[in-house]
Length: 447
Image (cartoon, rainbow, N blue to C red; front, side, top):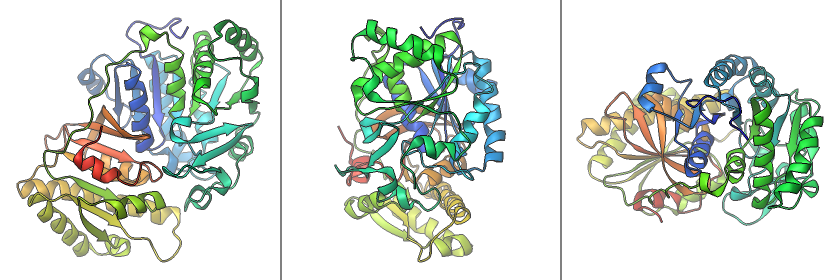
């Protein structure tokens, strides 16, 4: 259904992640679906595409989540032009599963306005949940768990997302939330309207008139994994008519994979992550309570607290922290460097500056450790902004899938022109993701 008018060497799908951690989660989903995939850290050059070899899925990790609408327009115009040129039938704008965004920063509405210019299909499916990580959309209302805790919260009452320092979620109705970002005319498709899962005849009979009558964004409820195949079949059928833009978390790719015949949806399972062969560096720039619990629970690291204000203002302090971490790593000890919680509320500029400073610290530690005789081969970064900036500071141009360490937490293998940073096992995780023992599992390995 999705291959109409698609050349043999065109990818099936392109995706853009509005932050690096989410983009690696999508990398995991397309890779586990059996697609040859690589995540590029920017629109790939012809030389990078040649080095990557044949690909079924091409990802681009970006930082639109922290951009103004004007900055997003520039960033995403290049992405849309690239995706259209590949011949892919689906361009997936991968947003956070909590949809945290705002009219002035990370606007999903601004992303849709630009990217749909490059995908001629009038239908824009928006998938509103991801049950595999505790995200649910019912009657257009978004709900989410906090970390691995079992309780599910309406997003505007979520203990973390309702008080996010940059994009607090104060509206649970995604129609209203996205309308405030300029995305008008959203049509909600409630889950009670879906046909029975597995009845392909009924599903197709339901899909056709829905596509025929749609002209704009379709917000698709998702409360159960069984509904993924229905949503995926809808997206594939629409994409067979004309290339389309789809919006949502990694459940977009889960849906596309579930809609494939079983014979076309079989990938060799990734080998589990074994114990690290050398010391592990973890840098946590996230202020999430989930990350705070992970820091408190780890038993296999030397903790190194970082004072953010000094890191921002005092170059000598930053240099001292680099040498402190490099010395411990050279002795074979795992190091967990983590920022402190500021005494006063922070704004977007402070958050961005902290992410850049923390990212420089990561890069400087990697290089100082190598100079001390210890090349690092496994690194973890916690925090979406810090992850994005760290990947750039390390000079990476791509990430290949290694394994899933926890739901929503992917370990990738770095691609770089610098031998020092090429081939590193790299975990990038958002603040909300992973269980309490995640950092220890990164060091010790996990099934």
